[in-house]
Image (cartoon, rainbow, N blue to C red; front, side, top):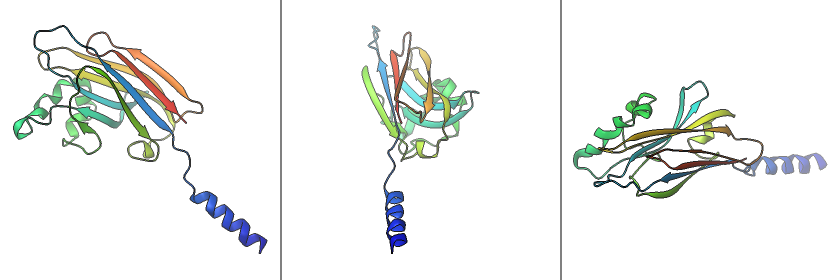
Length: 171
């Protein structure tokens, strides 16, 4: 009888969801003093420390152009394009989104949902690339340890097209 209760308790504990690790990214898009401003296309992805792409996290582009013409400009995100963007059929659910106005935007993912539920523990580079139609292009990388043993925040500063990129990992 005691064994049955212990087994039931053990199974109940296994059924409880483990706490989910979280990854949040704050992306600052500065206001640029230009005559004709176009919201930047932006891509966020993870790479291994050897530079190989691991997973796509977000791609912001103009989804309202007629005949999906917004995809034409995705190749201006040159580094993202070479690291796997050209292999995607846009829009990708959970990854594609509309361009955003200047300001600070926060994105969240957790370890219980794709794409981070399949991500092995380790050290990565979070990559953020922005490109504007008729404007500049910039890539910022931030080191990330996933899922990490303690809460950790790291950041990097863009120079023109991107402001501060802040990455927070909560185990």
